[in-house]
Image (tube, rainbow, N blue to C red; front, side):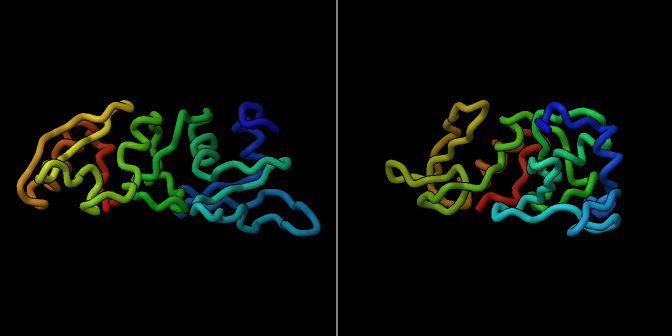
Length: 166
């Protein structure tokens, strides 16, 4: 089944979703390996949970959204940044830009996302909708870190999560 073909109705026939734990359980027997009530899915190397349905591996957080809301999300954001935490209270629909607004930092000279050493000062840059915006230059690393956090909060609002910043 292609992603677009999998319906909420079919999903609810074959799986049960516990929104408090974020776990899916099989609602059918799939002999010889799976029994009704077994925990569904596996954890990928990336940390995301996936569930194989009709030969297609679906991300559990996307299935949770379909299961509860009856539609496929654009993207689903894990609020606490734990990729395997698929509790409903930890998931929210997001655009691509929002979802990557606090992606883990690539290596830089400061170890702080958006802060790097440039022309004898700590330069702060924040990315918004694919464009880098220079916030300013700072004498101390602490001032630059604070400016980066403040800028992300102002520009990304609720998606300015700081759990992956270093």
